[in-house]
Image (cartoon, rainbow, N blue to C red):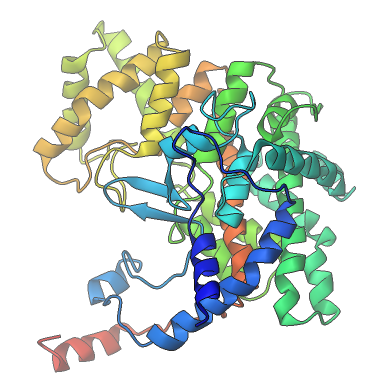
Length: 471
């Protein structure tokens, strides 16, 4: 392989680090589409060379237990945008959450001063590069402009839905209805060459990013308020979304920037990301692919978890008030053991992969310490954090006794009066679009294949185990 191409491939496989003084390396401004188009040839060549030279190498094994248990831990996906480490948590294109907070542009314009803009995470996940503020501002303007591409029939359709229909069901309906605007679907029907799929996929992806805040806000305003959605496109993506929801508080804007950024991606094996990738592998367009991902996210074992945590904390608070007990380490320890002895799960603790405190929990805790240190629910969460890992370690039946992202997010939202926790998963859905669809762009750019794993019957497994006792 040509050495210059090797260097090019490596340079775009890893994010640009900040200079030692905290500044960003100087480079000429370019649009997101131009940046991606310049990366595609070398990435395609690097992947082809990887497959040619190392395609037969074994990177893992599959046990019958893993097969029955939902393919847990099976290494069988290519995922560009993030990697989840059991010890240190998520890395977005190689950057930890604290590193993202340090180097990505913020609303103030200065990296490290406030939470990163969602537009900067979009740029990072798609390109693997830390963007400049000018590039982020250009992307903000582009997404605001693209928001006008929400088909005219979508909002009337949402307005016609029953108010008691679950917000996630409405979100899926709204995005599916917006699919009539798909550029990719039209290009495919017109016979565009396969090596150009990514260009039309990008058009759809950016349009989905642009229109889902209005879909989500319309649902929120319809179900809980007056149905009126007001925009403020002088703000960034997250700030404008807050105004559409009906919130006008700079501190809440910062929380939404943090919330949307940290929920964007968690490597490819989680249900919503994997579903988006799987459906996209059939060459369904990005609208249909992510609508499928939303349906996975709506499951109680995935995106509904943070509302379950909030309910548990509020039940704890109510129980202690009725019994005249103070909320402290001793009483919370007692309550935790009551929960565990009743064979119930302590929500918000444990993770399928992580074996330490989720960095997404930590950054939310730091936000709480800064913005709401005296909030009663925040104090309870902080006290739970001080005792729960020890309780769970003593219990001995939890692989990871530390808090995950869901342990905190609902409490932060509640502080600002965002009390409609049945809607919380929609916020998650607005965020997770960024990770799932950023990967879908590279699926099409690299020409990844239709996903089609091999399945086996229970009888086949029984025969295999009987005939291979030493396997």
